[in-house]
Length: 397
Image (cartoon, rainbow, N blue to C red; front, side, top):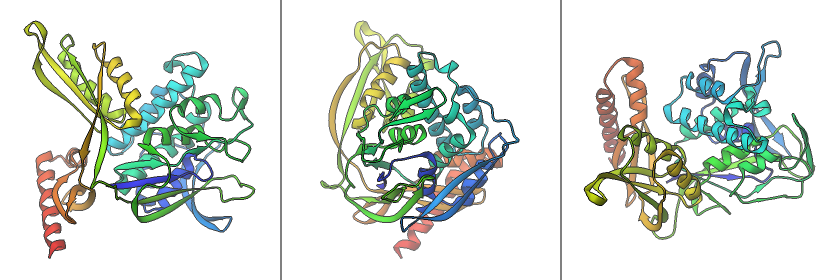
């Protein structure tokens, strides 16, 4: 399984995450082209090589034209910007989820609703770009699982739009609920709201570096200087090598629904996947008193159980959710980019006894290319599958 580990030796911020992913191999020109498609103006992105305490790192910059008005934005404005960009659907969904998390936390801290939240710093153009760049970088690297070290949030106070705040700032602390943190030994804010939102959303586990075969390492530079260490975020990219031949524990969430408009059931699945589920599906059943019903099953990472239970309760008519733990065996997976007449498609395959098996073109890639080229999804899918089979045969030979 293609795994990325965030080694947060000096905290985390959106630009540090984007820089580290670029340093680890995410193509900057592809990122720049995608970001330039956003329906906003007055900014330019760049990346430069810098040295922090002897460590070479990539510094991702968003340069904003001061003469271009950049108003405070509500959540709906940010979501419109994300939706208007030429981005893979999964990147749009993940980026929108990051800002929903930010909006929920800001609303909770300030005692208002998400519709009335002004994003202030995190809604500024550079943070919008940082968030999208981070999710797009993970997409380009083909990352399937993310883990992280605990986060050194710093200590003391910080000046914000509402005045002097304790570190971590209230919204940042809210974002980090359930995430292992510590104050560290550096005064000041070392985990920004954007960094907190991204790590909390992406990481499926926290702790020391997991058993993995490292393939790439990336360093993303922060703008500040730390007194005694390099202000960088390190990412390790490679293949996870779990003990037990790929066995892992998942939480299985289930509930029976017999009184809900069937038109809303697909939305329930979509919301569960957005909230971090491994998978979610519905099974038609016959319930009590012979009623037609559906059983919802959600496979959840351990650190997303509470969030997914709330998602199910919020988006359905059920009044309770059953939870149990089960083991599953997963093949290690990798991605092949293959060329089709309409563009590149990622193809996922499993590794069984060291050999590639069961190639499957990424459906969202096929849909995006088909819509752009005016051809059927089936044509793109079949072309990508044929290219993958040919590539496998050449590799095996």
